[in-house]
Image (cartoon, rainbow, N blue to C red; front, side, top):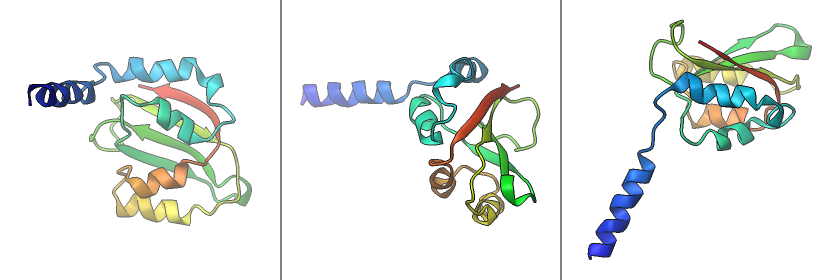
Length: 133
């Protein structure tokens, strides 16, 4: 019984690790951007284990050749347009996937990064990434 409590307590402590400085944590990914450029977004999501994306807002073009330009990923529940928060900005490699579902999801979920958004972005290829503060 005591060992079961110890295992649960240890698991709870491990699961509660948090990032104290979001900008510094994100800068590590920017510094190592070469690892992610040309790779699917799922790799970055996997490596970003200590911090979860809370909101995302994409820049979409009318040009059929480059419809999804960039996405700004936020890590707090602040307003999506609040300027004083660290953000990870991903520039995407052009593809021919429709963006209408993304536009609908962003509006429907009020920019929250839900499972449907995660599924949409996972296979997208990263062209570049930067951190904005």
